[in-house]
Image (tube, rainbow, N blue to C red; front, side, top):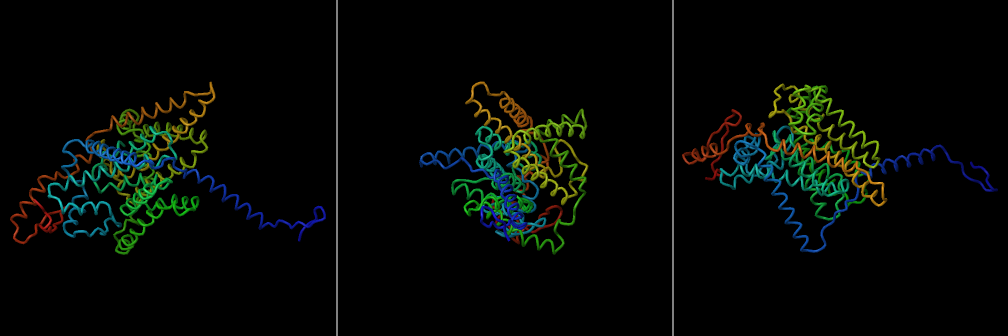
Length: 481
C-alpha cells in the first residue's frame, strides 16, 4: 500500500519500520553514552630509542620507589622479616610439598599469582622466603599504581592529577591493615588496575599486552573479578575492532582458568556460594567501612570520637553526595564514568561482604583491626577516582577559558587545593601505623632457623610442622640453609 505525492506513490511506513528505527536510535544513544567510558588515550610510545630507554629506566625507578614506600609503611618487625597469613600456611607450605602445582583450589577458586610467586621460595635460602613474599607484594602494588597512571590518561588529562591517582594506590590509608607487602592480597591491588585496564585504549602493543596481563593476573587469582563482566560487555558493545580487546581476552582467559576450581568446589560443597550473610549488614559495612574512611583512616576515627560512627558516616556521606552531585549536574561528559565507578565499587563490596557474611557479623573493630578491610579498597579507590576525574574536568575547562580574557574562574584552583589537602593529608597521617598486618604476621627468622635445624637432624628427610594446628609433613629437599 502507499499514498500519492506529486503523482508518485510513496510506500507507507509501517509500525514495524518505525519500531526498528526507534530501536536503532536507542542503540545509537546507548552506544554514544557508553563510548565516553572508553576515550582514546593520548599517550604513545616515545619515537626515539634513547627516549624509550630513558622512559623504561624512569618507570623502573618509580616502581622500586613505590615498593620501598610500601615496605616502610608497616611498623614493628619489618615487613620483609615476616610472612602474612596464607602466604605461610597455604602457599609456602604447598609449594614445598608440591613443587609447581599452582592449580590448587583454596576457598573455592584458584590464586594463581600468589602460588606462582611461592614456587620461587624453593630456590632461595629458606630465611629469604619472607623477603620474597613482602617484596613481590610491594612491587605488584607499586606496579599497579604506575599502570593506573597510564591507563587513566583518557579520563584524567592533567599529568599531576594522574600521578595523584597512581599514588593513591600505593598510599591508600586502609591498605596498611592487611593488604600491604604480601602476595595473598596482591590480587586486590590488581583489581584496582583491572578496572582502569578495561577502560583503557592503549595506542601501543606494549600497553595492550600490559592491560591483558593485568586482567588475566587479577581474574586468575581472585574469582570476584567476574563482576567486571558488565564493563567487559560495554567494551564489546562500544569498541568493535579486535585490536581493542586484548584486555577482554586477558579477562576472559582468567575467568576460564577459574571454571574448573569453581565447579569442583561447588560440587564438593566447599564453595562459599550459599554461605551468605545479611544484606543489611553488607549495606552497613559499605556505609561505615567505605563511605566513612574514604577521606582518610585517621580522619574517620577522629570524626567518630565526637559524632559516633553513624554521625561521622552521615557527615562524610553528605559531603560526598554534595561533591558527586555537583559533578553529575555540571559535568555531563563525566556522568557515565561516575555512575560506572560508583556502581562497580558498590557491587564488589556488597557481593564480597554478602558472600563472606561472617566478616560483617564480627564485632572486633579497632583502629588497627578491621575485618574484611580488603573488601573496601576498590570501592574507596573508585570514590577517590571519581573526585579526581571531576577536578580534572574543571582544570581542562579553566584551560579553555583562559583563551577568553576575564572568564577564568578560581573554582578549579580551589578544587585542586581541596583534593591535595584531603588526599595528601590522609597520606601523611596514615602513612605508617600499627595494624593487623604488623602483629598478625609470622616472625619468619625463628621459624626458618627451626626448620633448618630439624632438617639437619632428620633421618627421614622430612620434618613435621603444625599449620593452623594441623600437623603437616614438609620435605627437606627445598629447605635450603
